[in-house]
Structures are given as C-alpha cells and as structure tokens.
Length: 394
Image (cartoon, rainbow, N blue to C red; front, side, top):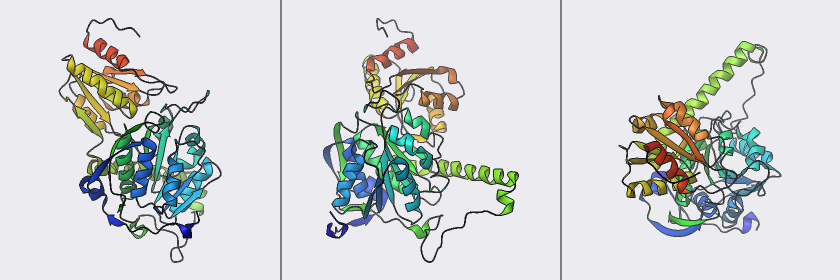
C-alpha cells in the first residue's frame, strides 16, 4: 500500500504516565510478538526500519502491518542487519522517533552499528527477541546474545511475559528520549517461549498515543536546513595527539555510562523500579530475569507450599544494573540461586560482582540451546541450599 493511500487516523496524544498508569485497559489474548507491535502502535513512532529475515519472531512483519494501518509515518526495509542498524543511526539525526527489532544471528551481525548508537546519542528502541546464535541454528530461545549487549552502553530491560513486553516497550520510548538519558533502550524477551506463545495483555485503546517526539528539546540537535550537520573534529589537537584523543574518548565513554545510570529514575517512574521482590525476609532467594523469572516464580510457589524460607527477586532492568536494590534485599541471605537461559551465566556474574559476599551465589541452574527450564532444577538447588534431604537427581 502506498503511503498516500494509508488511512489518516485521529489520535489523542498523551503523556507516558497517563498511558501506563491511568488509561483504561482491556484484556487481550495475544502473542509476545503482537504485544511488542501493539506497543509500537501506541508509541506514535515516526519511522520503523527492518531487515525482516533477521529473524525477529514476526515483530517487524507485524510492525509493517501497523505501518499499513497508518500508525507509523514511514517504514523502510533495509537490505541486511548491519544496514538496518546503520540506517537507524542516520535517521536519528533527523530528530524522529525510531524502532527496530532483531534476534540471534541478526543481532550479532548488526552489533557493529548498534554499539555505536550510545556514543552517537541515538534515541531509539531496539526489540531483542532472543534465540540461539551459534550452530546448529534453532529458533528456540537462548539469551546468550544479551551478554554481547551488556557493555554496549544501551539501557536494557528484560521482559518476563507478554504483558511485560507491551509495558516495557512503551516505557522505553519515554526513557530513551529523556534529555538526561538520550541513549538507546533495548527491550529483550525470549523468542518462541514469549514471542510465539499467547498470554493475557491489558492494553489501552489504540486511539491513545504517546505525545510526539520533540527534537528541539533534545541534547543532540536534529539536522535540517537551519541546523547543518556537525563537522567531525579533525583538528590537530584531537587527531594528532594521542593524549587528547584518548582523553576525549575516555570522557565520552564516562558520559554515556552516566547517562545509562540516569535512566534508573525513569525505570522507577514508569515501571515501578528495576526489580520485583516477594518474601524479602527469606533465607534463600531465587534471582532471575526474563523467561527464567516465570519458572523462578513457579519454584517460589512450590517453596511456599512446603513452608520453606525462599524469596523471589525478578530483575526487570539489566542496564543500569540494580546493585543497590539487590544488595538491600539480600543483605541477610544465605544463598542466591540464579536460573538462566544461557550457558555463560551472565546474570549470575553480574550478581556476584555487585554483592559483598559473591560466594553465596549459586551458578544456575542453566539451560541453553532453546531447552525449557524445568522447575525441578530450581527446586533441587533450593533443597541443596537449605540442606534438606531429597531424592531429586540431576
């Protein structure tokens, strides 16, 4: 459908706090991929760019439908993943609201451009629908790819289910455009387990959309006839002096990570904080993010039925990492069990690094290659940590 034939829609533009906290919602039974595309529909996106064969679990295909329905101003199909991510960086200079999504091998291929986004102050939202990245290939979820994103500088949110995917994606647009943040926000969730499965999602009317992006208020001015592109610094003091070159790069990296940390107050504002805690006075905690949090929640329920002193910490924000919040909860804990959907245990590594007694962290259980995470694996570690006799075998 050509752009001039797309319908012109009448929308009510509102603040993000109204969208997420006050607007009436109706319950829908949809997939995680649909949930992310529905969030994009309400985000008042100016432009979506994609290489639809990344693959990214149908999200960008559905976003193409959202464009055809008139909810997005422009939709551009790139020729490959690196081109997609480079085009996002270029489009950001025009001062517009941007979205794309990718997954697995597609993310890794586009990573060269993605890691430049924070340094270039690109305010874009990136959907990551995790899947296996190494051979033999599979469409099943394995969030090893998130380990590659941890040190990119981007803000990173990890959704447990379809509802999280919807809410986190909407909130991401507000967070990325804050003047004191203005770096990309990645919203990750597990491919297949969430993207292909249906769940209940409470959504506000699609007639309500987030207020338009304001490039004038941005810390990086948009390029137009009145604001020409900034000249890349080529003067001798910068390019011909190693000291100056290193110093400038060092200072800028520090500023990017400061921007990342400043996103935390907005994670509190829009999502109620970076973690969710149940039974905060427990001896043992299961700490998990994404799909693993759903299985951790079930293990926590089993433990409560058995009268065990077990709590749950769901980590919603991976970057900035909630060091202070986790430390406050686990200061008297005897063990932390960290189930994950990857072989390297990146969340376990993060938690070990952020608490004084990293020795109480149990590495796992972990599944990878797209396997499911049986609750029994978590219960085994709970029994072991509490010193309870059991007949379970791994």
